[in-house]
Length: 316
Image 1 (cartoon, rainbow, N blue to C red):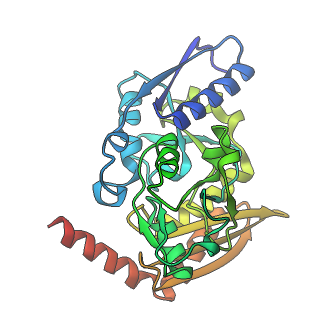
Image 2 (tube, helix red, strand yellow):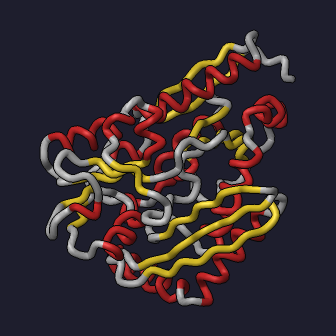
């Protein structure tokens, strides 16, 4: 255990991000009562640019770059992230020191008028900022209308309450962590909406050369969650996954085996390719790559190429 006296956590200033940072601060205080843990709140570009879909303005990496800069400059020691916001490849010099035990990984349906997605009549407006959710909803319910929904959890709930949407889809984990579980109308099972890679799990990032921090944070790592998320991220990395690509990946573990399901789709839901694989929990990366390769064999590469070409064309 390090003899350091203070540790600084870099965090976005949204309510959910601060909850996550406070959660890690409490865990560290339990482990190391003599350690003073302080939170450095920051506003990222992802928090500031709310009038465009993430897929058009640079992806979820916009939520972590400023936090990494604070660590690089020595203003912070670690950063706490939702794992679904962490790019598949970390910048050189950074490492994931720990992945905490997963909260509910599923999506949640919220509506004041209807009990489920299946009950929504044609033309109903569903709010989400996720191409992953959009593609899965439209694949099953092509009669619905998807509109962009950005902002923090409180902002999204307010927009629903104001009647801007007939329903919205949010991550169940964030709602439960912020005490909004009672706002959930229906939990959507993975069979109907496969979660995002890493959804529900918290990651702790630090500089790779900080061996003292890697040792200090190791008790916060949850091996089963870490293995599952590693498999999911390996699949996404092989597919060059980002928020510009409608894909999902969700792994579960049982009897020292990982079962990983993944999909790639067109944004309008007209094509959705799904695959699964299983393997030893000790080699999660291999299982993730296996699912990716199976998806590519069935045509996922063509979909990804189309999306890449269309994004380059829109940026020109």
